[in-house]
Length: 163
Image 1 (cartoon, rainbow, N blue to C red):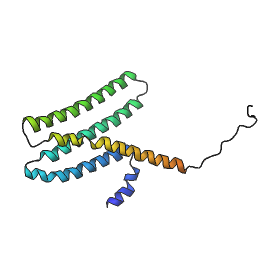
Image 2 (image 1 turned 180 degrees about the horizontal axis):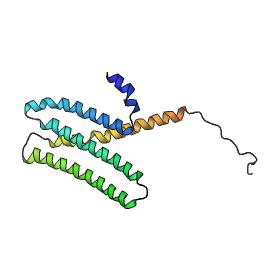
Image 3 (image 1 turned 90 degrees about the vertical axis):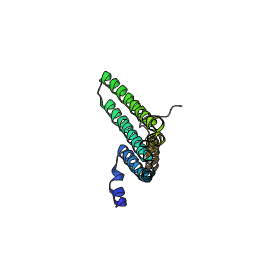
Image 4 (image 1 turned 180 degrees about the vertical axis):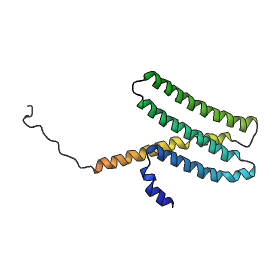
């Protein structure tokens, strides 16, 4: 079943869809691994990881769709500047709000429902997956370029070499 999905659909994904899919799979696998800790009075481990990955996914999508919006904006510079400030500020605020909420739950309220450290660790996979995906695409493009036959340069007719 998984092999069929990988052959049929994953190959056709765009770069953005590939990173989002891998981030979602990693998030759910680690969430499932951390979920048994909820039975030992530590539910914050799994929920911190889940919230960190959701915030990270939101940040990645805001970068991707924000840049698409900015690049498709035909000549409206004030709008483009406003959108870039909005997306940048919103990402910073959401990252900070997640960390502040988790810090309050973990250290101040001594609440076990959200763990600061796993929320922070949930922020880490997105940059790693983006870099991994970029290098895989770069390697594939290099292989494709190497397989392309070298075409001989055609010399201009009627011109003689300079002496």
